[in-house]
Length: 207
Ligand SMILES: O=C(CO)[C@H](O)[C@H](O)COP(=O)(O)O
Image (cartoon, rainbow, N blue to C red; front, side, top):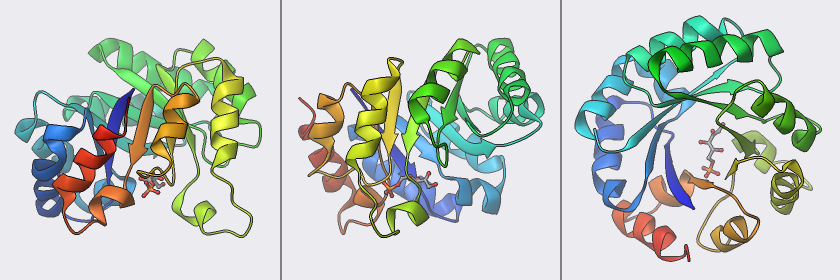
């Protein structure tokens, strides 16, 4: 299972600092949606230039204009770009077309999708490389949120998936046991006093 670091910060400078500390321990460096909204595509280029050996993941959360948005992110150095599972099929197909042109991949983020397992099957059929079983920051704060639902949805989907939203040293083993291909951790790494040590601890918890 790969480890992905979601850098939910607001400046390229802060992201470069986080990436430098965590990179030895992670496979995928994710530029969070707030970072891309704040700094634009230049942040993607900066991270790829600093870490050409890492998979760079641009969390665009595209909802429309799939081909255009994915194309500009791949052009800026992204290896993986997200499209929302709630988008129409034509948006996902357009993004996949851009990924094919660049020899890269589309990840479909299932945040807010009611039947994640069913939508996961559909979007992989449309050409997504994998899906993200995702509970966003707001959903995690809601009463009654349960992390294990994401794992159940991943198991039920039967397609390659990542899990995002609450991954920590205490949950990462369950993510791996559920058969996830990628565990995504944000706050558990960037919120730690020692970013490198937190990333190393997550890596060590993967069997
Ligand atoms: O994409 C995101 C929010 O939309 C986050 O990066 C993702 O949910 C990671 O969350 P956490 O900080 O709980 O690990």
